[in-house]
Length: 353
Ligand code: SF4
Ligand code: SF4
Image (cartoon, rainbow, N blue to C red; front, side, top):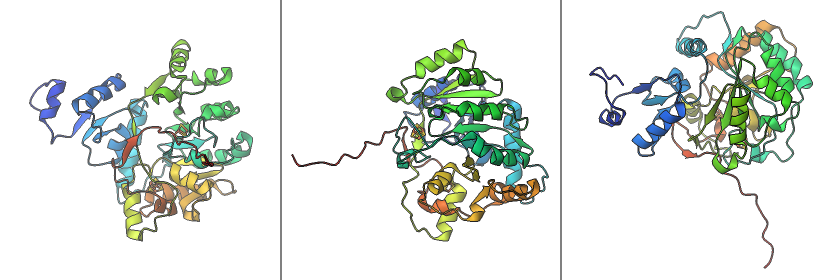
């Protein structure tokens, strides 16, 4: 590691507490995270993924645990966030750095602090591909490029028709890479495995310990089928709150929004593009009424240029909070850390003894 004074051993990182440390490596992500975990005495509060470097001007210690994009796409992501912070952003092109697409409200786990609020869905549905296709087509038509599509649920493999969504995304020239994330409880079917082998696709295998019962099997399949994959382990989450409205002042809500590290996890859900995943599910579940400016509605017919303008306002220029931010804790970056995937224990009415 070079610090300006020469090469140091990894243990000596501790001697430079005031330095911002940037770790770049073409592989061995998990090993690096493990080493940092030990070096930091189990404290990962200041270890951020590379996406955060791109968005935040004040990094402390970084490691790339998520982005598996090729260097070229990562640089394009960087350009996007850099241009967005310019006061005058006169870029003509419309690039989406990340677009989540939700394919189902169903999940095989029941995580208490799920950002997609899965435990709150009483009668969860799968989304119909044919029903969503016109809106997805309008969305793609209204942008120049999508650097990364991430398929999300719930759990994508709970949806028997997931392959239709994946195949469609693979065939879109404007979509440059695709991440399929699983909680490692379900083995994909033959068709899904064939599609996961596509060059554009990266398979993210979550390691939630004992909950991820099929993890080893999924890794074996990925190796045998030459699917590009990564295992996401040792991750802690942030507690964003529940479904209670906080009635914050406007000033506080704006501060929460502007500091929020989830505000760029854009999500397409049932025909609408939301600024963030939590907002989408709070709205879909009916806890929050997102006002018209808070999403782009692709269920309606409009010219591509009009959609572009809406996207620019919502994703690039927006500096004030969403209605949904009133439901979130102040998650100024990297506070409220909680263990990943803690399960909600179903409420059982106690009878008389
Ligand atoms: S695995 Fe947990 S966090 Fe992921 S979608 Fe399901 S309930 Fe939510
Ligand atoms: S609703 Fe607002 S505060 Fe909550 S996660 Fe989304 S952007 Fe962040």
